[in-house]
Image 1: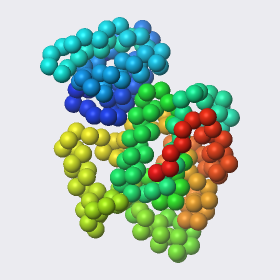
Image 2: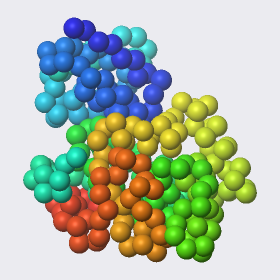
Image 3: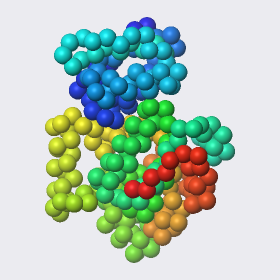
Image 4: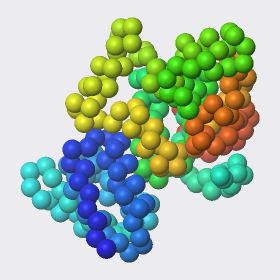
Length: 73
Length: 168
């Protein structure tokens, strides 16, 4: 199952918090598409997800300062 | 609820322990910002609430005559709960926290109350200080149910061992 989360309007620490809580609700094998801004969220959301054992499938530029990160639980 | 020994056993290399001494709105915001941020990126997080910091975990978020003796009840009323916390600067007779909450919402930054709820949802471990509770006449029932235990210094030191500890 595919889930989506837009944290482009969020700020630290809620960027990480919303991502973590969303991942916690998902079943193993589900994917989460996260829209986030460059800077702290782009630098750290994929890294922290990876460190916690989730699989980062893709990191893509969407437009302007927005990026898309695809994470598999 | 996990036992203390289970918490100690699962402790990994990434651990943050916070001593929440202050009951100021801005300092508690710092405590919960650090706690939620750390928990969200995989840290085990402990918060040890003592003295004024106990206001953050009271079940009654407004003013209430908590305590046993008349003096303790008066203190309990004056301290209040999470919704009564003053700012450390520019409190302006209680207007400061209202202005900060408004600014936070306007700038899409999580408010103190949102951070507290996020900390609970992320499984941040909350503990109350036994000695401060005794001084203020508070009981475990006066706190939110997410408070896992009432601790003394020795137990908190064992819990925080091997990680980073901050005093706020």
